[in-house]
Amino acid sequence: MDGNSAPEQSAPQRRRAGRPPRALLGPERITQGALKLIGRDGYKGLTMSALARMLSVAPSALYNHVSSKQDVLLLVEDHLMDMVDVSGFATLGWEDAVRRWAHSYRDIFAHHIPLIPVIALLPVTNAPKTVRMYEAVTAGFADAGWPRGNIIDAVVALESFIYGSAYDVNAPDNIFDSGDLAETTPQFAGAVAARSNTLGHSNADAAFAVGLDAMISGLAPRWLPRA
Amino acid sequence: MDGNSAPEQSAPQRRRAGRPPRALLGPERITQGALKLIGRDGYKGLTMSALARMLSVAPSALYNHVSSKQDVLLLVEDHLMDMVDVSGFATLGWEDAVRRWAHSYRDIFAHHIPLIPVIALLPVTNAPKTVRMYEAVTAGFADAGWPRGNIIDAVVALESFIYGSAYDVNAPDNIFDSGDLAETTPQFAGAVAARSNTLGHSNADAAFAVGLDAMISGLAPRWLPRA
DNA sequence: AGTCTAAATGAACGTCATTCATTTAGTGAA
DNA sequence: TTCACTAAATGAATGACGTTCATTTAGACT
Image 1 (tube, rainbow over the protein chains, first blue to last red):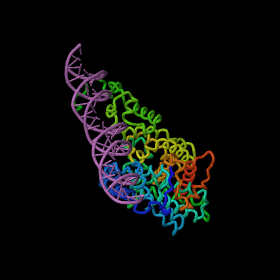
Image 2 (tube, chains in turn cyan, orange, blue, yellow):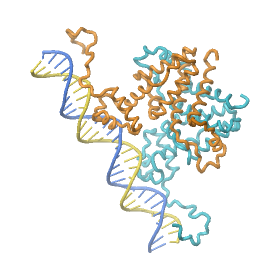
Image 3 (cartoon, rainbow over the protein chains, first blue to last red):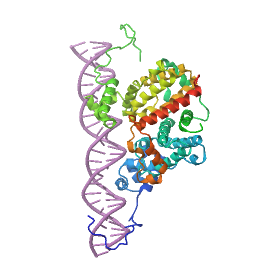
Image 4 (cartoon, protein in one colour):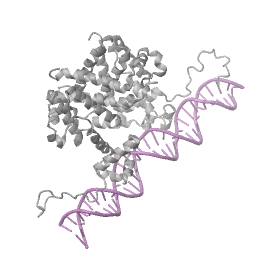
């Protein structure tokens, strides 16, 4: 198959710049188009046809650049991961850094719920921005003194909480309305009614703050020196 | 509409037993059929056509009993909620009760990932078994001494963690493989490699145990007397 | 000038959930 | 018995949607 050893060609990179003859599409344009579409119509509006229309292209053209709609979601996911705020790990203490990271992580994916199964279930391979985010977080944990072998479990636990909390942001206010059954469940109905509605904060924000504080203060003394 | 007071009929319940003329379908049969289908083919196999076929009925017949496929999922959800183990709240201390509850909750929905958006986003109204589960949990918290107004936030925080952890159970082993990018992310790749693989426990189980312990021990001293 | 190939086209396909006009068959009343 | 009422089932049709495929188009290199 490689029978004819290319005679001249000066070796280094064969076929370098100027490769794409037309280059009407590409990962960046597809990502941007998908984001614009999601921003306008939500994930319900993100169809391959609509995406193609936004890019002035036939739907089937997309399949020259992505192999499925999941691939499009993966592109969007990787883009969003780049927006997660990891700055605290370089400037703040561990606790505050985790808090800043977790808040921005949750806020971003609260607007992108349908991506959660994609993030949670698909390998990070070939998602460079995602990997970079994890690198910053891991480095932050390590700098704070965490033993290498325990970092990932802690991050995964925090992420699990973050994903679940992102769902909670989108829950309707009446999600705990027992309806007709209220009388048969006095404790639950009472607790729901007694939920302290902190003004300026939604129920989801309150639960997130409580859970995040609990997790951080429960995690810290375990492996962090100088608790 | 109730103009003619039924002459004889001894009054109490008008039209009691024997109401359904044919009763070929119904919520119970639909739930059982859906569960059987899910058990055999997974959620991919749960289509309205397949469900109808399993019940020896035309697809459109289902719509006399449920108003959408979401309704079917809601029936399944409520059934599963009945299987969540809340027995600990009557017999164990708060910490162990929460642990037992959380474990069974996660184990059940780890096999029913597609239901998580349904649970997390839809009101519990008219999901009687779900409400009963919450009643038992709330009662357990109250008995342990939690202030009424703080119970729901804590439960929601725990649930968020549980849902996220259920996803994690289904993540592939190589989810954190950086692939080509491993060299540019030494901390992360190192931490992934150093993750202590406890024999007999999956990575997901380890992270779940870590997070649950952290959450419980972080929650308890906050509002629980006698920490 | 001619070849190679990445990329775009447009017409299909198959799978789903859902709708609707129509039929079927118990039930309760006359 | 007969008849009207109605819950329930039917089967055909619809409209999205993701995806495939044979074919065409047009730069880039020889």
